[in-house]
Length: 245
Image (cartoon, rainbow, N blue to C red):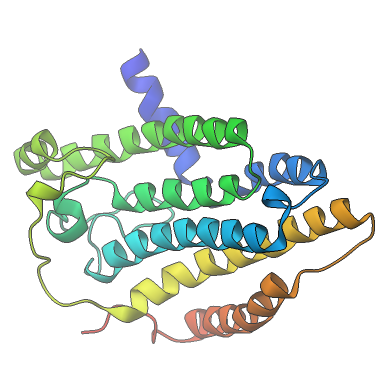
């Protein structure tokens, strides 16, 4: 039945969702390779558009980081490989939206898609990600409904899935923990700057008919990549990036 197919598809997609942004890459690269001029014919407008797209991506990271930082260990929304939840998040970002992490992801990829200046690709990305997270959310909600019963159903009945309802805001319980947010979002930041550097290199090469790297994006990538690798090493070797007590 369809009611079973959506969650089952969601379980399969849940374990592979970290690789989904890579699907966007070849289509974005193809569009960027078709560019033969800067945005509005000006390098100033081009840079302004790039910074706007970056700000959209960073808004998505901020949404995710805010949700992660206020999620205690074992809480719903903190799992990455399988469905795990010792407690139910209902405050902070989770008081206005049931899936703030996925909302953050959607905002981020829309910023990346917008970098191509292709309305069609932006719409296709939005449509594809809504379908993706519809299925993943169905799997998560089936798990949480079984795990928490009526308390989950009451919360889910008044809080929207993705579009935030700010009038429902409830102050987060506990304090913000920087380390879990950093552990999660350093990957997002690295992917964002890597995508910007690569796509801008493709566009520069298409416009000038020779391989060119844009230092506006390669320099930040050179800075953030060692940080990412260092934190990845720390994450593997220590528990320093776990939730602060």
